[in-house]
Length: 84
Image 1 (tube, rainbow, N blue to C red):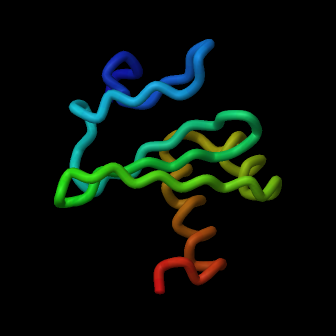
Image 2 (spheres, rainbow, N blue to C red):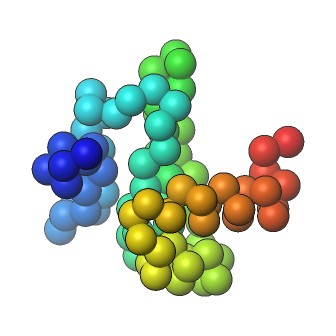
C-alpha cells in the first residue's frame, strides 16, 4: 500500500484516521507520543483502537521493518496472552 493511501497518519493535531480506506480485520498502526497505537475495523465496521506503551515493544516496533511489524505485534499479543 502506498504511504499516501495508508489510512493512519500523524499531524500537528494528533492522529488522523481515514476509516473509509481501512480494510476489515486488517491491523493498522502508528507510533504516537512514545506509544504504539493499533487500529482495525471489525466485520461490523466498528473501529477498534489499542494502545501499547511498554517501552520494550515500542522500541522493537520502531526498529522493525514494515514487513516485520505485524510479526512483532503478534509475538507481543501471544506473550501477553491477549488473544484469549
